[in-house]
Amino acid sequence: MRIVCVGAGPAGLYFAILSKLRDPAAEVTVLERNPRGVTYGWGVVFWDDLMHGLRHGDPVSAASIESGANQWHDQEVHVGDAKPAHMGGYGYSIGRALLLDILTRRAEALGVDVRFDQVVDDAAIDSDFSDADLVVAADGVNSRLRARHEDDFGTTVDSASNYYIWLGTHKLFDVFTFAFEKTAAGWVWLHGYQFDDTTSTCIIECSPETWKGLRLDTLDTDEGIALLEGVFARELGGNKLINQTGPNAKTSWLRFNDVTNRRWWHGRVALMCDAAHTTHFSIGSGTKLAIEDAVGLDRAMRAHQDVPAALAAYERDRATAVAERQGSARSSTAWFEHVDSHIDTDPTRFAYSLRTRRDGKTAGGVSFLLHRATQYRAGRLGRRLISSTKRKLRPPAPPQAAEQTPVDATR
Image 1: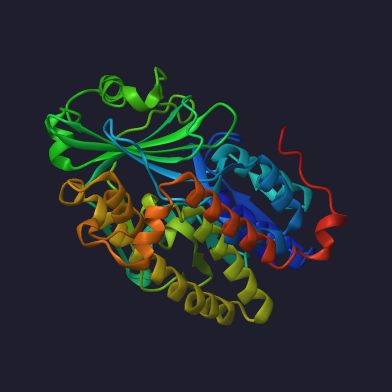
Image 2: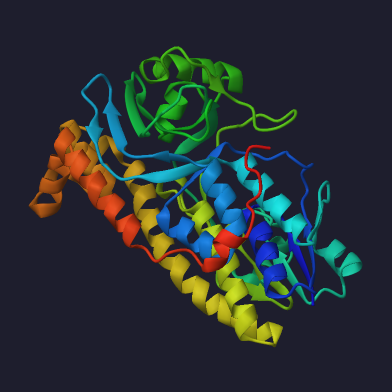
């Protein structure tokens, strides 16, 4: 079988890995438009469920990802100079560049042909890979392969109203941090989390009214970032915001695009990750869903000899699972689009509203009492103990995990 994956993101690379593990004789090619080692973005987050799935899918890359990831053990909500409120929870974060390097080297070790500096569209696929049995479009939210057949896929793209910018900083947020600051033009907030020994992701977001009121629509990017460093001086502690996502590239302000598709495959082309669907960054599911798409398509390919039958099964399975996450993501998007209506409560209630993505003014019941308990050190220690116990109760990784050597995540 000949398989071509367009896009060397987590989904394309992981599906290539699983394809070679499923059929070592398969001819698998991954095409990436960027040069080797160049990626856009900072760190990504994920949780135990994804880590567990990675251990079962490919213990070798899973071990490397786990050893290269940072773990955080709380979420804090800062509102101006008020005492931070706690939301508990834990998770992993890893630099996107490191994640892709681990997956690339693992794929190449298995015999996958990973080619960089390859700008690919549907016409190129037709001419250069006309004999491919399966083409995976994992080429992002602005997928060229999807665009040529949008009517067949039934693609819709809706833009959220808030503006955001994806930056880095050397301020190390040792817990997942949400910080809200009030300016003369309205509220601005950041989502911050450390992902390696020196750097944190720092996403800054605000309403369109605040964005224009701060003149971020007219300031050049560097001037706007300097303004934001002043707004978040308390959180950054003298550290700069870094606007560097690749050679000669700078991040700009964006609005989130909510992508859906009525169909996930057409002919021999299957959509995957952001080409098939997007979920708002505030729920941190992008990497999780990308990997789960790869696992879902691999599972369908194992179950069906016929490629169209496999693609139909893949669509049925993943479209249902993703629809639920997209519903949660849209609720989260709407919550952040109405921060002004939530933020006039006390920090503990506001943090509860943020955690549940509901109106904190009507908070009550056992869930809210447990949230209040988390505001005390003893309550946080108890919650962490429960989380650790849940981790230990998960089924172990497959036996072959101990028999294989992980990729060196420090290289």
